[in-house]
View 1: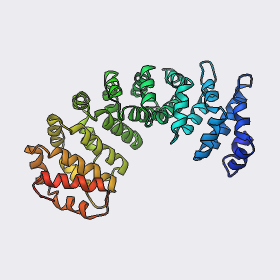
View 2: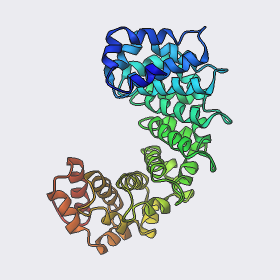
View 3: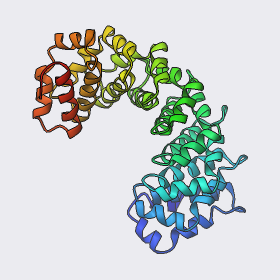
View 4: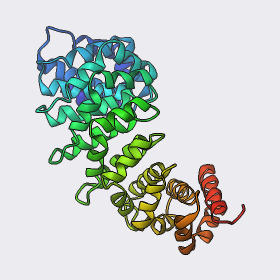
Length: 352
């Protein structure tokens, strides 16, 4: 415990330079007690928090397979938590570590830790590790699906569960469904769309709203069935509600992004957004006080809604969005926000 506490401070470089990473990895080996395993993993966790160089050092010392071994069935929940936590850090912005987790069988054991009846702390950290393991790694995303991880994560979204577990599971599904058509289908087939829509309820936290909306955004990208499923599950009205003034910017950003994705090439969803008051709400997100990321998603959603003309275009024109869109073009927003605002203005009949 003393070493783990020490490493919260400024002693990390000297520990690594002195061979401390290798020594700590050695304490993860079979034969040591659970208490030793837990404290050694906790020390590695502090070493790897916000320190990319240490992520590589731990891998070079054989830390990834040693940590994966600690996740085996039968181990203590405390050891499982610490080992999963270290793997989550190790895989942050580190492609080699993500591959290493897969190559030493880590994905299967992380998925196993998501099983019903397990410790909420273990489930949260295992889902968090899978979130980072799957960033920009198609093989890992496929492997999670093949080991039943998508169904397991959807199961963790069930009503009445821990908010921390639900948030971690939604975050993992968000990454798993990014640029992966099979995982999007799998998530829908496991009931994931309905489960994520359930997390948008007013009683959920802002963090949960943001993650659920982001996950739905990724599930609906280039997936017509998922877009229809969001509407069938009653998901459009709660997404529109999350656009309301006064809400957290991150929630409004992801809700607008989800509506942008849901409405792409889907006339029924566009009409539903209009009927729920979504057009006026999106125009409201173009206000100067909103950050550029919110402007981008709101303008993108408006451009999508007005791309076919008809009632959605009429509703947008009635809200007087032209001045707001022109302001986005004139301000220091992102290039993408400028592009989407220009597209919306063209759809509304104002050439830019």
